[in-house]
Length: 141
Image 1 (cartoon, rainbow, N blue to C red):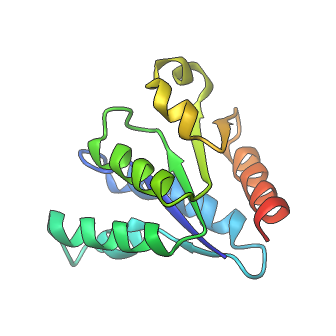
Image 2: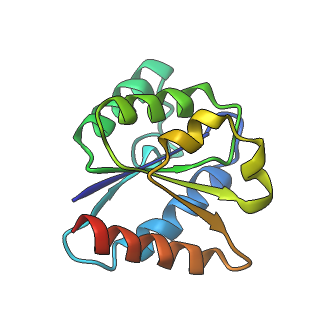
């Protein structure tokens, strides 16, 4: 199974872009048979700056190939994230969304409609990462 990690990246620090993704990779990667792909695998190198077309091509390729899209709604105004969600929805991919509980009420109603399952970042994000990993393994493996 392939899991693609989506979420806003423009204007964020490298830590903000990759921190939650690395946490999920660690927890989801615990299960055999799950491959986690992240845009930071391609764009996160300090030695390489990709352009928007390259990032678009990478992301849309992996959304078409993945079995499940996991989206962090860390940047609710991200046009790219919204388009990635719509692409996955159009392709009938399960979409797991992550949000801070206090921010969920701010999302556009379509996100709620498109979400297969929603998880909230808890006091300890590792608990949320464990919950997501367990859910993916239970329902999609």
